Length: 76
Image (cartoon, rainbow, N blue to C red; front, side, top):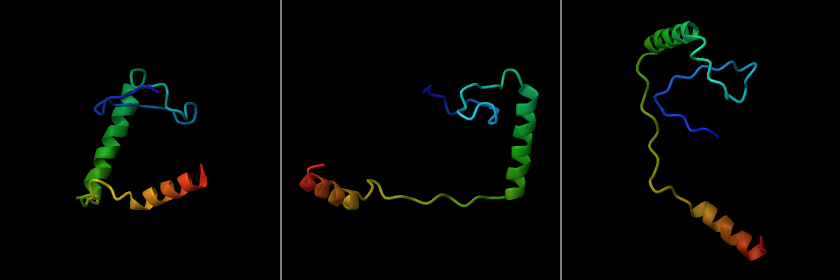
């Protein structure tokens, strides 16, 4: 799997490339720009988005630790 930088703009045809392997941006810059414009309009209509939920760091693994201990007892 190829790593993609967070700032890259990508354009895929999900009907013919569901695995998102071929970036079609270079061949279709106008389509990409139209979609970006539609996204910006949508974001404007959406308004302010509430902040995401904060998670505890480090995550509470106690539930998983108990399961792992059980699996060790079972020999799995």
